[in-house]
Image (cartoon, rainbow, N blue to C red; front, top):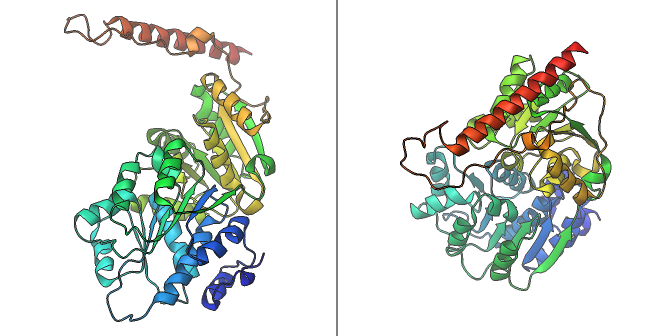
Length: 434
C-alpha cells in the first residue's frame, strides 16, 4: 500500500517522499490507521520491519493538530523510551526527518555525554522526547523533566531493555506519566515478564505481529567455519584481506573481546573500529558514522551496541563468537538483509560452541553450510580437555593452603589448561610438518 492511501497529512507525505518512501511496509499498513484513531498498540516486530515510522507518523500527525500557542513554553507531549544511545539517536533522527515540515521539536537524551546541552534544550521547550531510561530517570529526579502532560508513550525494543536490566527504571518512569494516554509497546520477542508489563500499561490494544518481508534466514547466504578459538583472529584477518568484502560488521560476545579484535586487525594492516558500552558517546558515534560513510570498512560491535545500527547495503556480518541465545543469531545476520536485500553471514564455531550451533540450526530449521577448506581448520580435542574443569565447590576457608595455585580447584584448572596447551602445541607441530 502507498503512504498516500493512509490518510497522512500533506506535510508528512512531502517529507516521506523526500526520504524516498512511497510504499508502506506491512507493519506501517497495519499500525498507522488504528494509531491515527488513538488506539493503543502491542507490536511484536524485529528491527528492520519499519516500526519507527509506524509509530512516528501518527504521533507527529497528532501533535500537529494539537499545536495552538507556540509562543508558550512547550511541554513534553510524546515520550519514546529506547534501550541504547544508538537506537535513541536513530529514532530521533527519524522523527526529525518525517516532521521536517512541521513546527515540532524533538530531543534525544542519553547517558555517556554531558547533560548540560540536554537540559538547555529542555529549558527551551520540546514536543517529543526520545530517551534511554537511566538518563531520563536521572533528569526527572533532578527536576529538569516533567512528564505530567504526556499524551503519547512508546516503549521500543522492550525485550532488550529486559536483557539489559532496565525494567525497574522503566516501571519507575511509567509512574510519572498520566494514566490517560496513548501507549505503543514494541518487542521482538514476548517473554513472560514483558507480556505481563504490556498487559498492565495497555488498554484494549490492537495486536500486530510482523516478521520481515523476507526472512534473513532465507535471503542471506550463510556459512560456518569450524576453527579453534586460538585461530579465530587469524581466520578473520585472512577473510577480511579479501577486498570483495565491501563492509563487515563483526560481532564479539564481550566489550574486551571487541577491543582485542580491533587491535589484532589493525596490527595486520586492516582499519577497524569498535563500538560498545565502554566507549564514550562521541567515540561510538564517530565509529558508526565512519562505517556508514564507508570511511571504515570494518566495525566490531557487541550485541547491545549493535541494536541501533542501521546501515544500508551492509555486505557481510561475521559472528566471531556464536551468540548464546539462538534468536540473537537471526537478529545479527538480519543486519545485512535490510529491506529485503541479500547479504552474507559468516560464523566461526570452535569446539566449545558446537552446542550453540546446534541450537541455532534448530531454531532456523536448516543446517548452515560448512566451509571445509580454509587455512585454519579445527583441530579436535578430547572432550574432557574442551570442557573447563569445575571449580571446587567447597566453601572458602582461611587455611594458608587456600591460596591461588594451592587450592584443589585452582590446581585442577591449571592442570586442565596445561593439558589443553600441550595438546594444541603437539597438533600445531603436526600441522607444520605436513
